[in-house]
Length: 366
Image 1: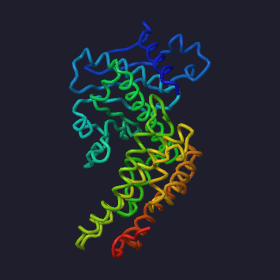
Image 2: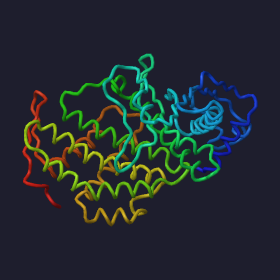
Image 3: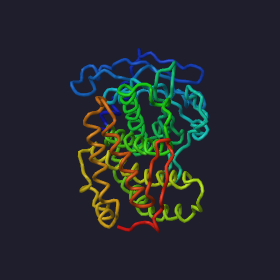
Image 4: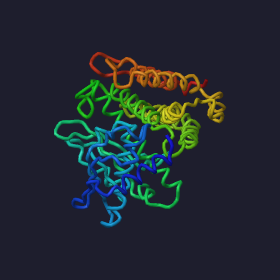
C-alpha cells in the first residue's frame, strides 16, 4: 500500500463539496461518496468502499477540533474500506481519557468484564472490541486521542502512525466479521466447559486475531516490523524469569491461581510472535529479514514453536472466511497447552471439566 496514495484519497474525500456529512451532538457521521479521483482510477482506489455510515464520538474535545479530526478519520476509513472489509464497523470513539472510554464502552450486553488497555511490555493505544447491536455482532474502534491527533499534525511520521493504527483496527473489524460469518452466535455469547477450555481459547483468539490484523494491514502507513520485533524480543527475554516467579509464588491450593497466569504468560509470548509473523507475511517477508530475531531464537526453547505457530496461522489465513470447523484453530490452542506441559506442569483433564496438575521440579531447560 502506497501511503501517499492513501493520503491523496483522504484529501479528495475531504475537499469534495457535495459529500454529505453532519455533526450530530458532538459526533461525526460521514457517508460514502466517491471522489472524481477515485472514480477515474483503475486500481484499488476505484473499488467501492465497504465503510458504512458511522458515528465518531469524541471525549474531551472542543467542537472545532472534533469536526476537523472527524473529517480526517472519516476520509481515512472510507479509503481503507476499499482494501479492507469494514462493513461490520459499529463506530469510532476517540478519547483523551482512553482508559475510561474503554471501561465505559456500551458492549450491548451485560458483562462484568472491564476492557483495559495493554499496559506492560507494550502500551495500548487503540482497541476494536466486539459489540452487539440489536443482536448483530459488530466492531467498535476506540482510539486514544493523543494518538488520533496525529492526523492533524504536520509531522509526517505521526500521520503515518495513525493511518497504520486505523488500518490495523480496520483489519480487526474484517477478522471479527469473518469469524462471525463462519461461526455465528459465538463471539460474546460462548460459555466454556472448563477454565482450561477458556484459557486455550483466549490464547488462540489473541494469536489469530493479531496475526490476521497484522497480515491484512501489512505496512500501510509505515513498516511496523522493527517495533514488533523489538517487543517480541523483550517478551522472549523475560518469559522464563516471569514464569519462574509464577511457579515460585504458588503455595498450593487452587491450581487456577498458577495455571491461568502461566497460560497467560506463554500466550502473551505467542501473541507478540504473531504480531511480528503477521506483519512479515503481510509485507511479503520472512524471519530471515529480522536476523536479530533469528539469532535470539537460536538459543531459545521457543525456536521450535516460532515457525510452527507461523505455519498454523498461515494455514488458517489461506482459508480466510471459509472455515467449516475449528481444527486449524485448535492447533494454536494445543500448542500453548503443549508449552505449559513442557515448561511447567503436566495437566490431566477430567470429564467433569476439572483438572489435575503435577508441577515439575523447576522449569525444563532446553
